[in-house]
Length: 345
Image (cartoon, rainbow, N blue to C red; front, side, top):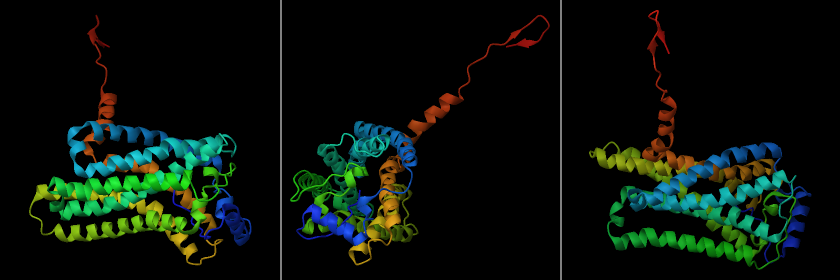
């Protein structure tokens, strides 16, 4: 999930929480749940999570085991994004469902549960946000500057190395700030994600860095390079005289724009509202929408596999068309002629 940044330099967590409550009159974002009834949230999440997990596993299996798909350079970041999303589908959402079924209590109510939940909700989610930002840049290079990936050395420098750095950075940063924070965490077992407010988010530069580097910059990169790609595609399409090359570029362009649109729809509103609060907007303004924006981030995790699946027509047909054909097959009937010359089945 996106970080709920409130900067209180070098204050401990208890002081930060007290300050927030005093500022908000006891109704801060971190001290309450979304107004959407729990049973509605439960059915929304469980009805989407099960098929989403199945779709993710289906895609990962074929993207990894199919040699042709595995060797396509534009599929590598999709595989990593699906793996990051799987952590949210198998850890974050099940813990949220358990919270609802236990009448609003985190279960088991231990710090370890909260730390693991935070790692899935913040580490893997924001790691996916960073990867989407890099995916927008890389897709732009693959479409318009494919010569940059023409040799093994260039592919290592511009493809494999950035992906490795992002994965290492995300893992190291969130393991350190969540499991070894420079402050004391306070766990609220009566709220989802144990209050969704690790102490590092209000500790000096750490919270600001996470919000700026891990949320704002990747989202801006997605928006900028998606718009740039869309403009250049519309201009280039008129002049391109190589249909096969255009079809390949068209597929990568549609894939990027689909993923980018999903990212911007669910991340941009919350980013804008949080940024406005940092710039001086009173915290009670936009309080209710912020709750819904925060919850809607789950839809990015849940819908992402289906958006990816649609970009692979062969896999899409393999998953759905076979079922349609099987259901359309009618068992053969045997007709016989009775003594009166009537056909009997």
